[in-house]
Image (cartoon, rainbow, N blue to C red):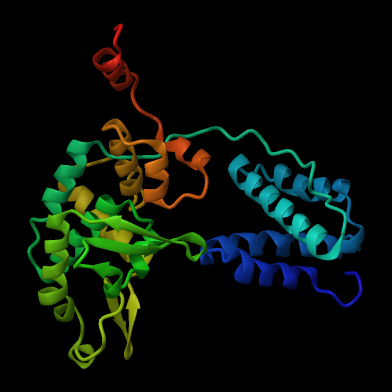
Length: 304
């Protein structure tokens, strides 16, 4: 490396303090730059003199491993961000500027139909145990708000504003957005907070301040429910509902987006609801069936 500057450490600090990326995004970026660091050390190439040819050699390692185009694209995105940072902060050459992304085959996100969501939620409501009520509330929240799984895991009780009927979510990059909650969801949440929440915790934590809306006890503290637990809960309810599609908790977010578009929501409103930075990201949700588009056309077009 050039001089005493640890460019990789500086980039990590930049990701956490200025970009304020999520933990998952940081882990992905960090893995990529650590792999680059190892490659450069093996080839005795200082960061300050790296060229596009060096980066192409680095990426060839992954192409030879038959890495998926989507994963390779992410690594190229990391390189572009890293070298853009180096150019801005240290006036180094941006060796990644002209790197070309591989063609990524677009795959439609898995989602449930409106009838399937209704059936899923009905089945979730059959379990009237304390955990069953909690599980039903989690699924309703995922679908009603379109929140990310990470947002559901870390949402706190005080983010729900029962007086205004909104929930305040903190998304990627710590960006906040407010989402209105239907009246029946608010009533469900109120019942859960008042009558179920403490029953799910061991007695020695009954006096603990309510924090995470969906908490689990770990030693003497409250922790958010894990991603694995949420997966297991949904998988069990899907089986009970007889739904065999490859559905994950995140699929409920896709489902809501699809249903809102079908029912006339505009792209900009959907962007604000889901907390996406770019309108381009919303394009993955515009996989409406041709039959539906034809139906809307026939009903709305003045000359149809």
